[in-house]
Length: 89
Image (cartoon, rainbow, N blue to C red; front, side, top):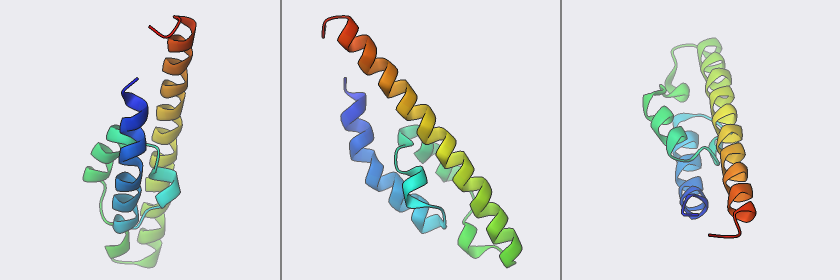
């Protein structure tokens, strides 16, 4: 059950990094290590050449962050359920 504290400790870091690149803090916050890895390869949305391109980058990047966050929460919920069903061993 090391994953829950790891995601909790990484949440502010990933959210800050997303915000720094021009993406939404709350959408990226629960994405964990996978989100941090993806953010490393996403471009800075705040430095796009045109406002239309910037808006498109933000929309796509936030959709990716939301999907990764939902995936991470689903995996954690499944692991917690397995931990409870196994009797906490």
